[in-house]
Image (cartoon, rainbow, N blue to C red):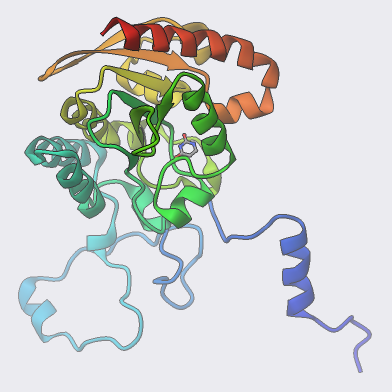
Length: 283
Ligand code: URA
Protein backbone atom coordinates (compact mmCIF):
# COMPACT_ATOMS: atom_id res chain seq x y z
CA UNK A 1 0.00 0.00 0.00
CA UNK A 2 1.25 3.50 -0.80
CA UNK A 3 2.23 5.85 2.04
CA UNK A 4 0.90 8.88 0.13
CA UNK A 5 -1.99 10.58 1.98
CA UNK A 6 -5.39 9.76 0.48
CA UNK A 7 -6.59 12.41 -1.94
CA UNK A 8 -9.70 13.99 -0.47
CA UNK A 9 -11.36 16.28 -3.04
CA UNK A 10 -13.83 17.60 -0.48
CA UNK A 11 -11.01 18.72 1.80
CA UNK A 12 -9.34 20.48 -1.13
CA UNK A 13 -12.55 22.35 -1.99
CA UNK A 14 -13.06 23.26 1.68
CA UNK A 15 -9.51 24.63 1.79
CA UNK A 16 -10.18 26.72 -1.35
CA UNK A 17 -13.49 28.06 0.04
CA UNK A 18 -11.91 28.97 3.40
CA UNK A 19 -9.22 30.90 1.56
CA UNK A 20 -11.63 32.87 -0.58
CA UNK A 21 -11.21 30.90 -3.82
CA UNK A 22 -14.85 30.57 -4.82
CA UNK A 23 -14.79 30.69 -8.60
CA UNK A 24 -12.76 29.24 -11.45
CA UNK A 25 -11.12 32.04 -13.37
CA UNK A 26 -8.28 32.73 -15.73
CA UNK A 27 -6.76 35.86 -17.23
CA UNK A 28 -8.53 35.15 -20.52
CA UNK A 29 -12.34 34.94 -20.60
CA UNK A 30 -13.70 31.65 -21.85
CA UNK A 31 -16.72 29.37 -21.69
CA UNK A 32 -15.48 26.68 -19.30
CA UNK A 33 -18.71 24.72 -19.67
CA UNK A 34 -18.33 24.47 -23.44
CA UNK A 35 -14.67 23.50 -23.44
CA UNK A 36 -13.95 20.36 -25.47
CA UNK A 37 -12.50 17.36 -23.67
CA UNK A 38 -8.71 17.60 -23.40
CA UNK A 39 -8.36 21.19 -24.69
CA UNK A 40 -6.06 23.48 -22.68
CA UNK A 41 -8.16 25.30 -20.09
CA UNK A 42 -6.81 28.86 -20.12
CA UNK A 43 -5.97 29.38 -23.78
CA UNK A 44 -8.48 29.29 -26.57
CA UNK A 45 -7.46 26.74 -29.21
CA UNK A 46 -6.40 28.37 -32.49
CA UNK A 47 -9.49 28.58 -34.72
CA UNK A 48 -9.55 26.09 -37.57
CA UNK A 49 -10.41 27.53 -40.98
CA UNK A 50 -14.14 27.06 -41.57
CA UNK A 51 -14.92 24.12 -43.92
CA UNK A 52 -16.61 24.90 -47.23
CA UNK A 53 -20.44 25.02 -46.92
CA UNK A 54 -20.93 21.67 -48.74
CA UNK A 55 -18.57 19.86 -46.34
CA UNK A 56 -20.38 21.47 -43.39
CA UNK A 57 -23.76 20.25 -44.56
CA UNK A 58 -22.63 16.64 -44.99
CA UNK A 59 -20.44 16.42 -41.87
CA UNK A 60 -21.86 14.08 -39.19
CA UNK A 61 -23.28 15.94 -36.15
CA UNK A 62 -20.86 15.51 -33.19
CA UNK A 63 -22.24 14.20 -29.89
CA UNK A 64 -21.83 16.18 -26.63
CA UNK A 65 -20.92 19.87 -26.20
CA UNK A 66 -20.36 21.79 -29.44
CA UNK A 67 -16.64 22.03 -30.25
CA UNK A 68 -15.06 25.48 -30.46
CA UNK A 69 -14.89 26.53 -34.10
CA UNK A 70 -13.73 29.50 -36.16
CA UNK A 71 -17.10 31.10 -35.46
CA UNK A 72 -16.12 31.34 -31.77
CA UNK A 73 -12.88 33.20 -32.47
CA UNK A 74 -12.84 36.71 -31.01
CA UNK A 75 -13.92 39.35 -33.52
CA UNK A 76 -11.07 41.71 -34.52
CA UNK A 77 -11.30 44.88 -32.40
CA UNK A 78 -11.89 47.25 -35.35
CA UNK A 79 -14.72 45.10 -36.62
CA UNK A 80 -16.24 44.85 -33.14
CA UNK A 81 -16.02 48.64 -32.66
CA UNK A 82 -17.73 49.25 -36.02
CA UNK A 83 -20.46 46.76 -35.16
CA UNK A 84 -20.95 48.37 -31.73
CA UNK A 85 -21.29 51.79 -33.43
CA UNK A 86 -23.96 50.46 -35.77
CA UNK A 87 -26.07 48.63 -33.23
CA UNK A 88 -25.76 51.40 -30.64
CA UNK A 89 -26.89 54.02 -33.18
CA UNK A 90 -29.91 51.88 -34.09
CA UNK A 91 -31.17 51.78 -30.47
CA UNK A 92 -33.87 54.37 -29.83
CA UNK A 93 -34.24 54.16 -26.06
CA UNK A 94 -32.46 52.70 -23.04
CA UNK A 95 -34.31 49.34 -22.97
CA UNK A 96 -33.59 48.75 -26.69
CA UNK A 97 -29.95 49.73 -26.13
CA UNK A 98 -29.78 47.25 -23.24
CA UNK A 99 -31.17 44.53 -25.53
CA UNK A 100 -28.60 45.40 -28.20
CA UNK A 101 -25.76 45.14 -25.67
CA UNK A 102 -27.12 41.85 -24.41
CA UNK A 103 -27.13 40.41 -27.94
CA UNK A 104 -23.73 41.88 -28.91
CA UNK A 105 -21.05 39.26 -29.67
CA UNK A 106 -18.09 41.57 -30.27
CA UNK A 107 -16.66 41.79 -26.73
CA UNK A 108 -14.49 38.79 -25.75
CA UNK A 109 -15.39 39.31 -22.07
CA UNK A 110 -18.86 37.99 -22.84
CA UNK A 111 -17.53 34.42 -23.10
CA UNK A 112 -16.44 34.39 -19.46
CA UNK A 113 -19.36 36.26 -17.88
CA UNK A 114 -22.68 34.94 -16.66
CA UNK A 115 -24.64 37.78 -18.23
CA UNK A 116 -24.45 41.34 -19.48
CA UNK A 117 -24.79 43.96 -16.74
CA UNK A 118 -26.18 47.10 -18.33
CA UNK A 119 -28.00 49.40 -15.94
CA UNK A 120 -30.02 49.82 -12.80
CA UNK A 121 -32.21 52.66 -11.59
CA UNK A 122 -34.34 55.04 -13.57
CA UNK A 123 -33.63 55.39 -17.31
CA UNK A 124 -33.63 59.07 -18.29
CA UNK A 125 -33.11 60.26 -14.68
CA UNK A 126 -31.31 63.60 -14.09
CA UNK A 127 -28.20 61.86 -12.70
CA UNK A 128 -26.31 59.20 -14.61
CA UNK A 129 -23.50 57.37 -12.84
CA UNK A 130 -20.93 55.54 -14.96
CA UNK A 131 -18.86 52.88 -13.21
CA UNK A 132 -16.01 50.72 -14.45
CA UNK A 133 -17.09 47.11 -14.92
CA UNK A 134 -19.23 44.51 -13.15
CA UNK A 135 -17.63 42.48 -10.37
CA UNK A 136 -18.63 39.10 -9.00
CA UNK A 137 -21.86 40.24 -7.32
CA UNK A 138 -22.98 42.26 -10.34
CA UNK A 139 -22.23 39.33 -12.67
CA UNK A 140 -24.47 37.14 -10.51
CA UNK A 141 -27.33 39.60 -10.14
CA UNK A 142 -27.22 41.29 -13.54
CA UNK A 143 -27.24 44.82 -12.04
CA UNK A 144 -24.40 47.31 -11.60
CA UNK A 145 -23.11 48.30 -8.18
CA UNK A 146 -24.85 45.76 -5.97
CA UNK A 147 -21.81 44.77 -3.87
CA UNK A 148 -20.06 46.72 -1.09
CA UNK A 149 -19.00 49.56 -3.36
CA UNK A 150 -22.60 49.78 -4.60
CA UNK A 151 -23.82 50.22 -1.04
CA UNK A 152 -21.34 53.03 -0.54
CA UNK A 153 -22.36 54.58 -3.87
CA UNK A 154 -26.00 54.57 -2.76
CA UNK A 155 -25.06 56.35 0.49
CA UNK A 156 -22.98 58.90 -1.42
CA UNK A 157 -25.89 59.66 -3.74
CA UNK A 158 -28.42 59.83 -0.93
CA UNK A 159 -26.20 62.35 0.86
CA UNK A 160 -26.90 64.79 -1.99
CA UNK A 161 -30.59 63.86 -2.33
CA UNK A 162 -30.25 61.38 -5.21
CA UNK A 163 -31.38 57.77 -5.42
CA UNK A 164 -31.58 54.97 -7.97
CA UNK A 165 -34.88 53.77 -6.45
CA UNK A 166 -38.10 55.24 -7.68
CA UNK A 167 -40.67 56.67 -5.29
CA UNK A 168 -38.50 57.61 -2.31
CA UNK A 169 -38.87 61.34 -2.92
CA UNK A 170 -35.25 61.86 -4.00
CA UNK A 171 -33.95 62.96 -7.39
CA UNK A 172 -33.61 59.91 -9.66
CA UNK A 173 -30.41 58.26 -10.81
CA UNK A 174 -29.52 55.67 -13.39
CA UNK A 175 -26.36 53.62 -12.97
CA UNK A 176 -24.36 51.95 -15.71
CA UNK A 177 -20.76 50.99 -16.51
CA UNK A 178 -18.09 51.49 -19.15
CA UNK A 179 -17.86 47.69 -19.57
CA UNK A 180 -20.85 45.34 -19.56
CA UNK A 181 -19.29 41.96 -18.81
CA UNK A 182 -17.22 41.00 -15.80
CA UNK A 183 -13.48 40.85 -16.56
CA UNK A 184 -12.00 37.56 -15.28
CA UNK A 185 -10.84 37.85 -11.67
CA UNK A 186 -11.93 41.53 -11.68
CA UNK A 187 -8.81 42.52 -13.60
CA UNK A 188 -8.81 45.96 -15.22
CA UNK A 189 -10.42 45.97 -18.66
CA UNK A 190 -7.99 46.22 -21.56
CA UNK A 191 -7.92 49.23 -23.91
CA UNK A 192 -9.50 47.08 -26.64
CA UNK A 193 -12.37 46.00 -24.35
CA UNK A 194 -13.01 49.62 -23.39
CA UNK A 195 -12.90 50.73 -27.04
CA UNK A 196 -15.38 48.05 -28.10
CA UNK A 197 -17.88 49.06 -25.38
CA UNK A 198 -17.43 52.82 -25.84
CA UNK A 199 -20.09 53.35 -28.55
CA UNK A 200 -22.65 51.83 -26.16
CA UNK A 201 -21.55 54.06 -23.31
CA UNK A 202 -21.76 57.18 -25.47
CA UNK A 203 -25.19 56.18 -26.77
CA UNK A 204 -26.30 55.51 -23.19
CA UNK A 205 -25.48 59.12 -22.30
CA UNK A 206 -27.13 60.41 -25.49
CA UNK A 207 -30.37 58.52 -24.94
CA UNK A 208 -30.49 59.27 -21.19
CA UNK A 209 -30.04 63.04 -21.63
CA UNK A 210 -29.14 63.45 -17.95
CA UNK A 211 -28.46 66.78 -16.29
CA UNK A 212 -25.05 65.47 -15.33
CA UNK A 213 -22.90 62.35 -15.42
CA UNK A 214 -20.72 61.18 -12.54
CA UNK A 215 -17.72 59.24 -13.85
CA UNK A 216 -16.41 56.98 -11.10
CA UNK A 217 -12.72 56.24 -11.46
CA UNK A 218 -10.29 56.07 -14.35
CA UNK A 219 -12.05 53.65 -16.69
CA UNK A 220 -15.15 55.67 -17.62
CA UNK A 221 -13.25 58.98 -17.38
CA UNK A 222 -10.44 57.96 -19.71
CA UNK A 223 -12.80 56.05 -22.02
CA UNK A 224 -14.70 59.27 -22.74
CA UNK A 225 -11.71 61.63 -22.36
CA UNK A 226 -8.53 59.87 -23.46
CA UNK A 227 -6.51 63.00 -22.60
CA UNK A 228 -7.65 62.91 -18.93
CA UNK A 229 -4.89 62.37 -16.36
CA UNK A 230 -5.38 59.79 -13.58
CA UNK A 231 -8.43 60.18 -11.37
CA UNK A 232 -6.46 61.85 -8.56
CA UNK A 233 -5.85 64.80 -10.89
CA UNK A 234 -9.01 64.66 -12.99
CA UNK A 235 -11.54 64.36 -10.14
CA UNK A 236 -13.62 67.39 -9.32
CA UNK A 237 -13.01 69.06 -12.71
CA UNK A 238 -16.03 69.41 -14.96
CA UNK A 239 -15.83 68.12 -18.49
CA UNK A 240 -18.36 68.08 -21.30
CA UNK A 241 -19.61 65.03 -23.17
CA UNK A 242 -20.64 66.14 -26.64
CA UNK A 243 -23.62 64.10 -27.85
CA UNK A 244 -26.04 64.35 -30.77
CA UNK A 245 -28.61 65.46 -28.20
CA UNK A 246 -26.37 68.30 -26.96
CA UNK A 247 -23.56 68.78 -24.43
CA UNK A 248 -23.76 66.96 -21.09
CA UNK A 249 -21.65 68.02 -18.07
CA UNK A 250 -19.59 65.21 -16.57
CA UNK A 251 -17.71 65.14 -13.28
CA UNK A 252 -15.00 62.55 -12.60
CA UNK A 253 -15.07 61.41 -8.96
CA UNK A 254 -13.29 58.75 -6.93
CA UNK A 255 -14.65 55.25 -7.36
CA UNK A 256 -16.46 53.99 -4.23
CA UNK A 257 -14.23 50.86 -4.20
CA UNK A 258 -11.21 53.19 -3.92
CA UNK A 259 -12.93 55.07 -1.07
CA UNK A 260 -13.47 51.78 0.76
CA UNK A 261 -9.73 51.17 0.58
CA UNK A 262 -8.75 54.79 1.32
CA UNK A 263 -11.48 56.28 3.57
CA UNK A 264 -9.35 59.40 4.10
CA UNK A 265 -10.16 60.37 0.50
CA UNK A 266 -13.87 60.65 1.35
CA UNK A 267 -13.17 64.30 2.20
CA UNK A 268 -12.42 65.04 -1.46
CA UNK A 269 -15.26 62.82 -2.66
CA UNK A 270 -17.67 64.83 -0.50
CA UNK A 271 -16.39 68.06 -2.03
CA UNK A 272 -17.07 66.63 -5.52
CA UNK A 273 -20.54 65.47 -4.54
CA UNK A 274 -21.38 68.98 -3.32
CA UNK A 275 -20.22 70.32 -6.71
CA UNK A 276 -22.61 67.91 -8.40
CA UNK A 277 -25.44 68.91 -6.08
CA UNK A 278 -24.86 72.59 -6.85
CA UNK A 279 -24.98 71.84 -10.58
CA UNK A 280 -28.29 70.00 -10.14
CA UNK A 281 -29.71 73.00 -8.31
CA UNK A 282 -28.58 75.36 -11.09
CA UNK A 283 -30.92 73.67 -13.53
N1 URA B 1 -17.70 48.60 -9.67
C1 URA B 1 -18.08 49.19 -10.82
O1 URA B 1 -17.38 50.06 -11.33
N2 URA B 1 -19.23 48.82 -11.38
C2 URA B 1 -20.01 47.90 -10.85
O2 URA B 1 -21.05 47.62 -11.42
C3 URA B 1 -19.60 47.31 -9.64
C4 URA B 1 -18.45 47.67 -9.06
